[in-house]
Image 1 (tube, rainbow, N blue to C red):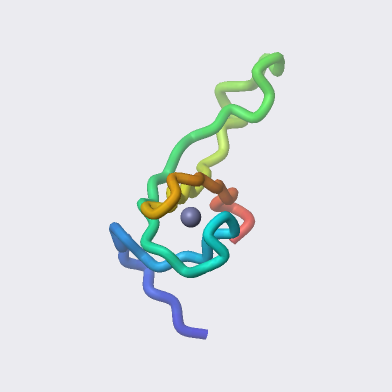
Image 2: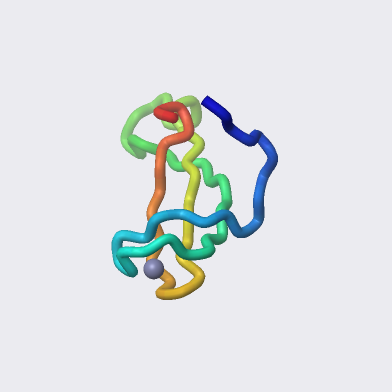
Amino acid sequence: MVTTATADSQPGELCENCDAVTPHQVSIKLVTESEEDAHAAFSREPYRVMKCQQCGATSKQRVNDM
Ligand SMILES: [Zn+2]
């Protein structure tokens, strides 16, 4: 399996909304998963947020799940 670890600013990703591979803007965001948890500060998970440059739809994927 070949993967590139470099952060590409506009990789082609499949957009379910466009039903096509389109350029996406990718950013990493820390998302607090349980705000009521006293340990919320420790349960922030990095998410990879992808925004379709064609229709503006966003999708996010937990980095740890990749
Ligand atoms: Zn799209």
